[in-house]
Amino acid sequence: MRDERAIATFGEGLTPIVPLRPPPGAEGLVLSAKDDGVLPTGSFKARGMAVAISRAAELGLRSFFLPSAGNAGLAAAAYAARAGLAVRVYVPRNTPAAQRLGARTFGAEVIEVGETLRETGQEARRREATAGAFDLSTLREPYRVEGKKTMGFEMFEQLGPTELPDAIVYPTGGGTGLIGLSKAFRELRAIGLVSGTPRLIAVQPEGCAPIVRALREGAPRAVPWEDPRTIAPGLLVPSPFASERILEAVRESHGGGETVSDAEIREARGTLGRAEGLAVSPEAAAPYAALPALVRRGVLREGERVLLYLTGSGLPFLSTDREPGGPPVPSPG
Image (cartoon, rainbow, N blue to C red; front, top):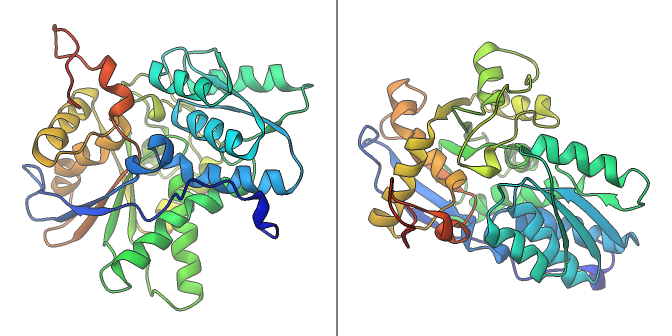
């Protein structure tokens, strides 16, 4: 940024890193979590949108569009409002009502179309082909990933070079966060502040796991997932854009991947709420749910420092949470 007057900010950054008790089956880990659910608009998407919207405003752009599972659209709407710009947000039909209403509250036009983010993105780009708005989609412009790399910079600032985690377990949908983390640690190594990179572990739901499948098969890119299904809308990304870069980020760190069931995600949300006081989104619960399997397979080892990345707050989901066969309940589980 050359013109500070173009910066749109709500004071985002430096989210807390909190210690956690490991779940059964992962007791030997030294576990912590970085909670981006406390960021403005309730998710890690604030990081990328703060930079993308600010830079776009500096360059003279006035209107934008993007497909979103909810969090990115909410963040884009808030930061566009802060900058005095216009944005259209295209969301799948199953997007939580709180996120749709939130984006509208910030002045965005919200258009519901498609069942998955891939379908939504295809329809958004078809409709916007001649509209003149700029596409803020994941990895289709260079600045959102620049905002995402602050995740790694903050870990270094908060923990120091000797206490960085051995592994970061990350919920993976579009995958920009993994690319941002990889870029952050690569830059920190280049200037001599760190000597290595935490292993990056991608976690996806069993019903939509194109990145984990590609990692297990040694494939150079992800193949679109057939019949994608999950309760975690932000992880319902059957064909991540630039999957080659996501896979490269994980492999360069000597990391890996794991899948979890929707039932395990629900259980993890409940445990994090009752045992830790953390209201997390289904996406953010997935890394916690994956820990026992990662320990069983030897991906994570006793005594290692492991950081879970909690990408979003569970508050937008509270109105839709239900006990099996029962009425909605005011809890994150």
